[in-house]
Amino acid sequence: MIWLGLDYTAARAGLDLAGIEMTPDLWSEVRAIEAGAIEELNRER
Image (cartoon, rainbow, N blue to C red; front, side, top):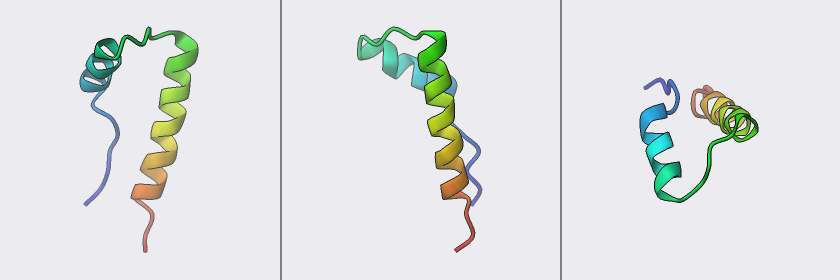
């Protein structure tokens, strides 16, 4: 299995439902977390 990343539409819907306003800075943080998660999930064990 290879992890590709977030479903951005679903992520945005979840943030909207949680009442979290998406800003460029917050989006940058989400993308950084995504990159770290993808790297870890796809690491060979």
